[in-house]
Image (tube, rainbow over all chains, first blue to last red; front, side, top):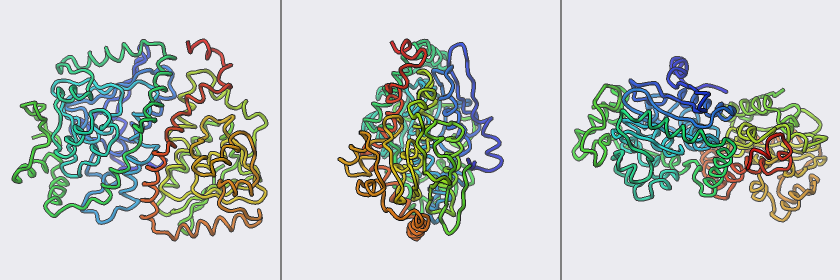
Length: 316
Length: 248
């Protein structure tokens, strides 16, 4: 299949999405490894992740898949400064070359990233720390079976600030996981959830101190991997069937349609101009200067910024 | 084995031996998927025609039930089978949820997995010599909800329960849009594709996006998702070594 991305981003993807498997335990690990960008996902990274999940289906040795991130954050969502990615408002027309390809991959197309995690026959666990924003929220953590997070996690629809709330609000996974009121809150205000709030809403299964995150996630994974593989397989099939009856895996078509027609106001276009040159973090800094603008990186109820700034696109 | 020609905004995809899909040939299924993925994504193509180079669109197997058993080969083979033949990356789902108009051109026998392609496609033209075999006995990935939505419901049921449809019967049942003399089939399909290619692309694609939401609401996706469980309950999977003893 054709690969999308620059030569550079395609070549980098295998090192930016790492795969490992422990044959003894039957646990595989997918590690996002782009720490300088808080693991923002490029198109080739999403393609690699999709392929890895497909490969996993064919490997009987694997029973549980952990998805995690290196660096200060789990994942900050999709890379926005990318030709084959999200249509930027300054682009005049949603064409097949840009907009439909992105939408096909993210929300609409069955073969694509949006379906890869939620439809796996393996048990999937997200190990979350730092920022878990945008697509990491509505495409990853709401679609895996279980989430283990550290106390510093900040989870939410950061992209709603500049793309609108469709990804969060028009997403069945999110609505069914945390309830419609909470889903709307995350989308209509863009204020993220702290780990505690997310656990209270049912999105996160376990919250632990940062230095216990990895060991706790492996303990949870290990417990599941020890179960009879045939039974686990039957139960995952059973759950997927039930998810289907509830329409949970349905791609977020509504969100994509809204995004297609998105027209930014002149002052909102300023966000994109800054983001192109200074990344999302720079654009959010400029956005904060606007009267009344809320910083979507600070979770409600946490009192503090989620992690010490280390650089990268979404830090202070 | 798969030929693609793109001209005048129409992509013509010609398969040889589509019955390999009925035999659960993984290599062929993956090749077909990759080709179709690229064709559907091709900015030069607004319409995609699927056809066969052979006298039959998809010839019936001598022992269709015999193909499923080896493909499942024990309980743990089901995820791999589902991923290739029933899951979101399978040919059926790729066609069902494609953003371009997909036309199937059917001559001769259309059996097994070939029926899935007809069900999944948007438009179908058939030669008067075509016959449409019911797929559900030996193909858990065949989507009955699609059949019920495409066809007149009682006739879909009769077909699903084992009756092979002639081309005229298929037209009467709603499975086929038009039936022509076999010698006129190619020209008929090209004209159908030409008409579809004149439609505004944005409108077509957005309509297909909304149609996907409708299909999902009607349960098409749920039926696809049920395929692994249907495979587990299919008689062909019960006699495999270790299956019965593993599911306690």
